[in-house]
Length: 324
Image (tube, rainbow, N blue to C red; front, side, top):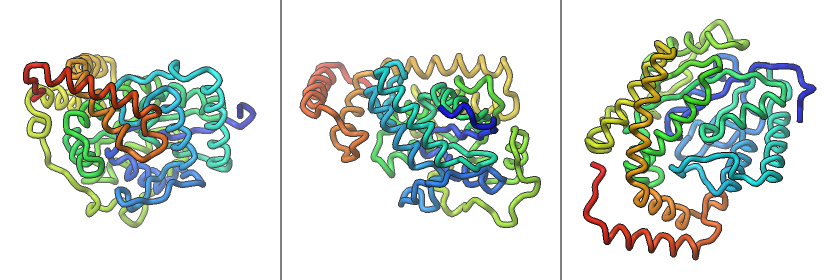
C-alpha cells in the first residue's frame, strides 16, 4: 500500500468510548504528536473536539458494519467476518486516509476507540504505511464510563460495563508486544504534568517542555466519584472493579505477572457477559433498530424486530434474573 514511505513512529491511543481518549489526545498533541489534517469536528458531547481523523472513523464504522457489527456491540468482533474483497478495499482506504492525514507528520497521533476491536488489523495497515507504533492505553473507571453513556446514549449500566470490558480487554491484550504506557483518567486530570512525563518515555519526537497553559479543562469532567458496586450491583460490580484495578496496576508494573492477573480477571468478566446473552442481545437489537445513523442501524429491520420479539418472549418465560 504505502510501503515506500520512510519508517515513522506513530502514537496510537486505545481506550473505551467516554474514557477521556479525546482529552488524552489533546495532551499528546500539546506534547508534540501530530494531529490528522481532517479532524472530526466538535460536538455537544465533546465540545473541545475529538482529536481524531474523520476519514478513519468513517472507515472503521464501515469495517464493523461489513462484519455485521457496530461500535456498541458487546459480542466479539473478528476481521475474518468481513468478506475478503471488502476487507482488502477497506484496508486500502485506511492507507489512503493515513497518507492524506499524516503525509508530513513526524509523530502521527492516531485515535479512535473503535480500534480496540480490531487493533491487529490497524497495526498491519500502519506497518504497510511505513509506521511503527507505540500505544497509550486510556483507562477510566467503568462506573464513570457507564454514567457518561447513560447520559449520552441512554445505555443501561450492565450493557455499558460489559462493553467497557470488551474494549479494554482487547486493547490491552493486543498491544502487549509494543512500547506502551497506561494512563488513568483520574491521574491525568489531577496531575497532567506527571502524565506527560510518562508519555515522554515512549519513542517519538516529544517536546521536552510542558505547554505553558493547562491543556485539560477540569470543568469538562463529569460523573466522577462513582463506585462499581453502586453502579453495576455486587455480582457484576466486583469483577469489573477487579479488572479496573488490575489494568490500573499496569501503569506501575507492566510485566508478565500483572498481565496474567489481568487475563484471569478478564475471564471472569467475560463469563458474566456470557450468562447475560439474551438480555445483551435484546439491548443490542433495540439500539440498532432505534438509531438513525446509517452505519449503526439494522440492515434488516424486519428480521431484527422478529428476533427481538423472540428474545422478549424467552425472557418473559424465564424466572426473574438480575445480574445485580
